[in-house]
Image (cartoon, rainbow, N blue to C red):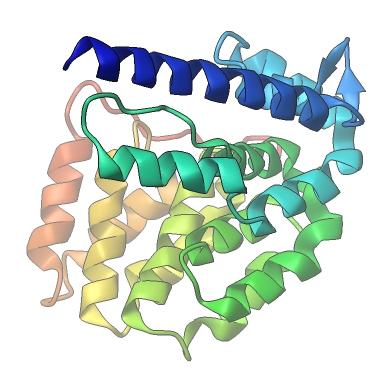
Length: 254
């Protein structure tokens, strides 16, 4: 790169840095705050620990929901699209400036931190499902995470969905098993799905568990008699019989 190009790139980078700093300052102003930090700062600062982030988001509570919705529904601003075009037009220097994507990811993370506190957003999640766009998996996971009526909504839609959308619902329930062990009863439905591909997918996903709920282990034993998935069920049982794996113990208080 010539010296003139170097100076040009540095000047452009400096100008973007100044404009970005101004935009970020304006963005943070007016957001709900907890312990002197704004909602954006809690979610976007990589130095914040996950437990502290979750505590802060839940402390802000439902006041965070309109911001999360705005971040997910918004479009990239002029500056971000300009940076993207500049990055595509030259390869000497790539500007790392993707606030729209960063905020979308932060909003998803924030909704999962809210869990049951996000129930007021359930109707909005349902409308998102109807779009059947790239955020379908997020809306499905959010409906389950909020612990409201969302799971029933997903199950009522299930039979009319495509294979990809069905798998995303299966994955959403699987994703929430650790936080909501009671979902094991729902997951049994997928392990016996009439679609053999979905059934196999549901069984295969179990390999990602460090501890397998006893209901699911018991079902794997039964599925050894199902000719469609017998080898897979046996393989999963062999997997969980290794010394490093222990089944989740049932709650003796129930």
